[in-house]
Structure formats: C-alpha cells, structure tokens
Length: 183
Image 1 (tube, rainbow, N blue to C red):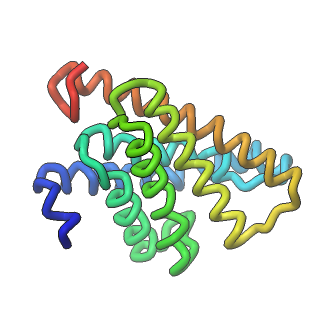
Image 2 (tube, rainbow, N blue to C red; image 1 turned 180 degrees about the horizontal axis):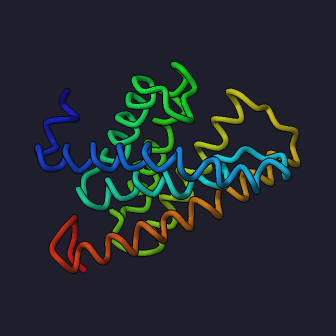
Image 3 (cartoon, helix red, strand yellow; image 1 turned 180 degrees about the vertical axis):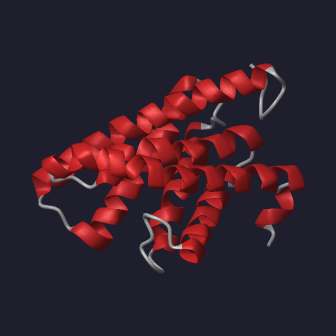
C-alpha cells in the first residue's frame, strides 16, 4: 500500500469520483455509438472510448500525482466487477480497464508532463483509448487486420478528443483553484 500513501484523502475522493463518472457514462454513450459502429463492424468502445477514458485523464489532472490514472482505472475495474454494468469483461476487466490508466501514467512520465497542457492531455487520452481497444481486441474480438487498424485509428481519434475535453475541463476548473496546477 506504499502507492496509496502518496495520496491524500481528497485525492482518493477525486480519483473515486472520476472512476464513478467514467463508469456511469458508459451505459448512456455505448448504445448511441452502437448505431454508428455496428454497420462498420468495429467495437463501439473504439469510438466511444474517448468519452470514458477522459475521466482517467481528469483524475491525473485534478490530483497532479503520478499513479492517479492507474488507481482510477483500478477503481473502475473493481466497480465494473462488482456492479456488472455495461462493459464488464468478467475477471478480465482487471486487465482491460487497468491498462489504459497505466499507459496514461507511463506516457506522462516519459514526456515529463502532468496534464499541464493540451498536447499532453491529448496524448494521454489517445494512449488510453488505443490501449483499451487493443487489449479488448486481443482478449475478445481478434479482428482481421483491416478492421483492427480502422478501430485503432478511430480509438486514437476518439481518445484524443477525450483528452481535449479533459484539458478544457481542467483549464476551467483550475481557473477556480480546483485541480493540479493553476493555469
């Protein structure tokens, strides 16, 4: 539990809230995206993922602490396992939900950013959604090459848009002194 000692109670509440928002939005977004993704034979998560991966980016941006995205993703995986909401992959949810958070934390570590600017938030969302789409494909779908590449491109686009939305929310919240670094 050494990882948890770096987080304050306020950080843990923020991380839990972001995880809950990410899970709560799925049942609303996924059916709508199915209307577009089903005729294209691509997983709906590739297209909708940016809207629920953005909450992982928000968790990091609001706490400004490494490991926040991973912790948020772990909380999401546990919530999905306990509640069985849309997107549950059974015990494999621990992998498919956690790895996008890990990739956000790794990507921001490598770039030495902390959700401090539009490009790093864009990258964080993009990495999360590509990772989630790729892992889901490996575990469940095993799409042929062309549909897989199409779904990964859509995942990158959707994840990047989610990162942009996160940046705009973080920027607005930071103006009021809420979140990591004031802009």
